[in-house]
Length: 158
Image (cartoon, rainbow, N blue to C red; front, side, top):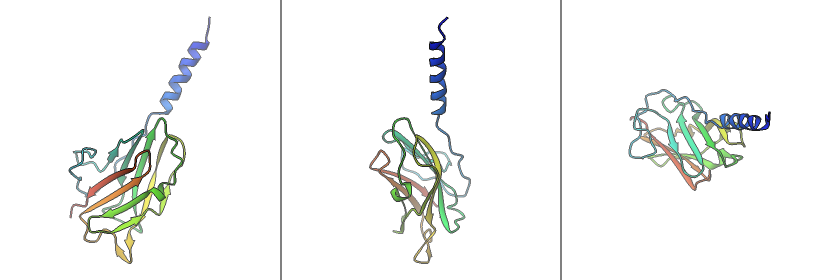
């Protein structure tokens, strides 16, 4: 009896099961869902998804309603063909509808591979003032991850 085809099939199934995307747990909070973009969830979920190119990116704010020293976002990246060995903090910026903008200061998560989840951190203040003061909307922009630009927005419920 030839067992080689059976072992090949088993190996194939194991490899595919390792590539199943990990779904981030949505944060809870009082933020209002953003509206107007087809990529945004129509429900009250805070998760925003961008499916451009070969990489699916999901972003969830973790503390917009109670910021500390940083504004934190969970970022999940999933692909089957692109190596995600990038400096994500260098590629990300955060802006508000009242013209405040900051660059990410840290990516706390792995680099490389095809399935990554980590935390992107931005400074909560700029020039001594809260980045969110007077803002009604916040936007995270991620550039150069198998697409020129990915944009994720949330209404702050103000």
